[in-house]
Image (cartoon, rainbow, N blue to C red; front, side):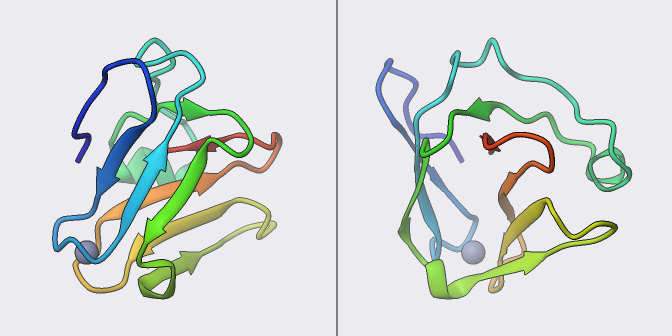
Length: 98
Ligand SMILES: [Zn+2]
């Protein structure tokens, strides 16, 4: 859940509140897109892009679960309590998406 989009970092939480991110977007919501990898096609959600270092885990780092597949290069993080997808680090770049 995105709590504010007032230009600075935005707070993103999972459903149960165990996990919280502070995200600085590369180009605000203009970077929103749908990834066409096998995982994101099934997930069906749009993602926005943050530059390297633009995603800070404020709360719940120990509650997040890592999922990897294929080359196991991309890192997909979920809340292990409520199952909400939090963010991922891409295979080809050093950016993150939330
Ligand atoms: Zn949660």
